[in-house]
Image (cartoon, rainbow, N blue to C red; front, side):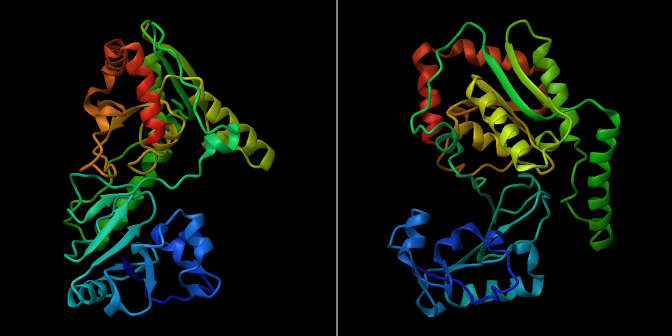
Length: 330
């Protein structure tokens, strides 16, 4: 497949901000087909960068969609229309802003609200290194045996402090005010959601249940407020040890309407407790997500301990082990 990527000024650009699908075609001289870069990203030689759009099957938009004006996006849409190809780009950041519908452009994003966004918005997985292999020097996970009571894990930012709740909600109020002055009658306002506060309430629900075992580490700040490299290394190991030593891990949105922990839990071969807050999930047409997670709708959150217990009790010993392997593979 031939891929066209328009030239951009690399001198002032943070390369990590580029659309992840363009990275295999980036070398020291700009866009190209360096074999070592493709191998690094495990991209087949069948995908080839071309410098003329006339020879392309798809158009990759290299910078975040947030950095383009509507006029620029309309121009890209027209170019794709003229050449009967599809454009692909990504939306960065936590917020679920609607950037409009363009018939010939597909937007990938992590955050956003499924019911609010047009059909040209699709979810992309969080980009992660294989921290399981890096930290534990293993390629195969340690499969846990099924016990009578499920072990629920969580390590992260969770607190019932009211001041923290107010601070988090103010952030969304400022964002919504900005959108109101841009375009008052819109559908993509951010619901107020104090993630650390809501997580803590869910954790307390588990702690109140006699049918589960809990393995929780509450953090009052992101990454426990780690500043030095030594502190970051320590908290990272604690984080992944917590997942590794649990059966199920609570995965609920943060500042944005998506969960990085969902993908980290899958990577570790454990079972996410996915609390759905109108989320976009990747590959929904090919992945049956309920085969890989304990699915909890936000409206059912007060019953979360019973939902997990019922799920655990319905799994056979072999089914419990196989689900861990399937999640690692996914």
